Structure formats: C-alpha cells, structure tokens
Image 1 (cartoon, rainbow, N blue to C red):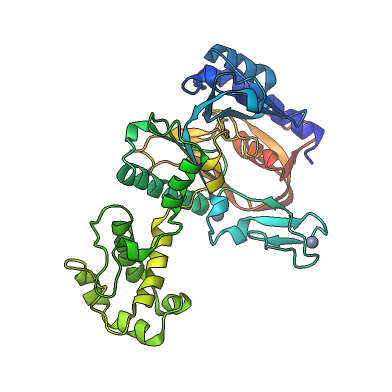
Image 2 (tube, helix red, strand yellow):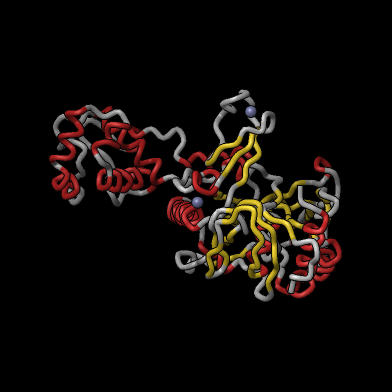
Amino acid sequence: MIKIETQAFIQAKFSEYYEKNSMNIQPPASMEKREFGFFLLKERIMLRHKSYKTAEELRDSLKKLVPSNVYYSSAYYELPEEKMDEKGWLGADLIFDIDADHIPTPCAKTHDTWTCRKCKTTGSGTPPERCPKCNEQKFEEKTWPCDVCLESAKEETIKLIDILTKDFGVSTREISIGFSGHRGYHLHVESEETVALGSIGRKEIVDYIVGIGLDPQLHGLSRIAGPNLDDFGWKGRIARGTYEYLLSATPEQLEKIGLRKGAIQSLSEHKERILESWKYKGPWAMVKGVSPESWGKIVEEAVKKQAAQIDTVVTTDIHRLIRLGNTLHGKTGLKKTGTSLAAIEEFDPLKSAVAFHHGTATVVVSEAPKFRIGDEFHGPYRNEKVELPLAAALFLLCKGAARITEDGSSVR
Ligand SMILES: [Zn+2]
Ligand SMILES: [Zn+2]
C-alpha cells in the first residue's frame, strides 16, 4: 500500500503535469461518441461513463481530477454516458495490445517477482501455474520495463504492422502506434473497413495474426513441395520463418522440438545446400531423412517466429477502454507516447516517455532492480535512501518500490 505522503507527492506531480501539458493531450477522433474513464489516485476508484464534447472540457477535467490513469473507449456510442447495454454501440477501432507480460523474455527472472496471495511465498520471473507451497493460483506480480523486454515488444509490434499492411491491406495512414508508458505498445487501426466488425470478426483477425489453427498442408506443405519465400500471406511467412529457424537452430534446439537424430544430422550436414535451395523450390523435398512430420515440427517453430504475440483478449473486446495519448501511466509516471511507423525502429520508449525533466527527489527505496529512465541507469537498490532525478524517483514511487522521505525538505 502506498503511504499517504507518497501518494500526495505523486498527486502533486501529476497535477503539475496536467496543469503544464494539457494542451498536448489530443482527444481521439469523434470524441463526443467515446466513453472516457479515469482511475482516481486518492479515492482508488474507477470513474467511468464520462463523455466530452470538446478537447477543452476534457483537459479541464484532467486538471481537476488529476487521475492516475486516463482511458477512452475504442468504441463509438450513441450515448456514451449511459449504462453499458444502453449506450448504443456504433462501432469500434481495431486495437492491439503488445505487452512484455505476454512475451517470455530471459531477463524476467532478473527483474520481475511474484508473491502468492495466500501464503506470501515469493519467487522471481513470471509466476508458476500454482504456488509451489500452497497450490494457490493467484499472485501479486511486480514487473519492470527493461530495455530487453521493451525491445521484444517492439519487435512484435513491427511484425504486427507487417501482417496488417501486407496481408490485410491496412493502409499505414490508418495505423497509429504508441508506447503504453509501462511494458508495451498499443496499435490502433481506424478504418471504415474494420469499424463495424463484431467480436467474432476480430477473433478471426487475431487467430490469423497469432497463427492459430494453421494447417501447413493447406499452405502448400507436402511430401514433395512447400511454400516459397516470396509467397503471399502465411505461405511466405512459413517459408521465411523456416528459413530463419534453420539458419539459427542448433542441434539441441532441433532435438527439443522432437526431431530424430537422423533428421538433425541430415539438416546440419546439408545446411549450406538448404539455404541455397530457397533460390529454387526450397528444401522441402531435397533433404533425405527429414520426414513430412519433421518438417511439420519445424514449420510449427517457424509459425511461432512469424506470428505476432498480441494480447488476444484486448482485440476481441469491442468495449475496451484504452489509455489516452500523452497522459501519465499510474504505475510509472511515464506518459503514453506515440511514434510514427517510420520512426518505430529508432524509437526509445524510456526516453521519449519521460514526462518530468527537471528537479530531483530523495526517496527511500525498498527494492528495485537496475533500471533506465532517459539516458541514465539507476540501481539496483535495496533499503536505501537516494536522491534521484524527479522522473526516476517518481517511477519508483509509482511502482510502489519506494516512499518519499517524510520531512520533504530534500525535495527540490
Ligand atoms: Zn502460496
Ligand atoms: Zn526485461
């Protein structure tokens, strides 16, 4: 639980931010048809079913409420302020959430921790299915945004953009992307073609993107042939994924996916020829000792590499609330920050999303891994008092990993 002084400090800083920066907060398209929601810092409640006609009204509200999180509906409603079933759903943007929580990264073990809700057993990394001590399935998780995690979320976002534009023909003009302010990216498609899609239609899109129920045989894989690198849609993705997989896979990895010794040996012996073979018809029929079943297993890995790891629940929820651009994330004090498709490769979320550029604060950190805010690394810390740049201090305070020093005199 965040202490009163700490909460007041966060509130004061968030308030300053909204006083100074509300002009940078742009409402979504057709704002009057959207539902807005706010999580209130002090009251710790969600205020929902709000609507605004103008950007000014919305900005005034942010200054007055000083919420820890600001959301708007991906949906358009006739009456956004009514109860859910009386709003009159008119359509919704197609939205995607790519979060490091859904991507297994090797670093999670070094910075994330979990605590069993029942017996308080703790561990590092992502929580197990069940608590090893008491069998409970609910955990408190403490996750951190780190460069490796954010980079993998970015890679998934870039894959998603590729699938949406090439396979679905979504125009780049209809896509907007932003760093969530914590551990991932949001991607929105605002298009006439997708706005009216219901949950089931969106589920079909999700299944395609994550490669669920993909039958390689329907994509040209047989005893004698397989898809080519330049084929359209999943055919080409399977071919390119297979190419990349075979390029990097070690014999141990091939064994792990269930290939027999003979097949593994054959694949490593003919590696050069296999890679060369893509110029013609691919390796599908040319490697002796690799059965169609083995190719099937390799293709499964290829599909995993090519699919984009999205939070499937978010996309199919046609009433979803999503964070508004340039508002603060209550868990980090960073702002949700947009980037263009052209600039995403170079985009540095932990730098661009910094909302506080001046001042320092002294905080008592209970525990924090090494982290980066802006250009500077801090920590790791354990039970120590440190003076930090305001953005870094606020980050720890919002994370619940630190408290403000009580005298307040060290705060500048
Ligand atoms: Zn337990
Ligand atoms: Zn990480």
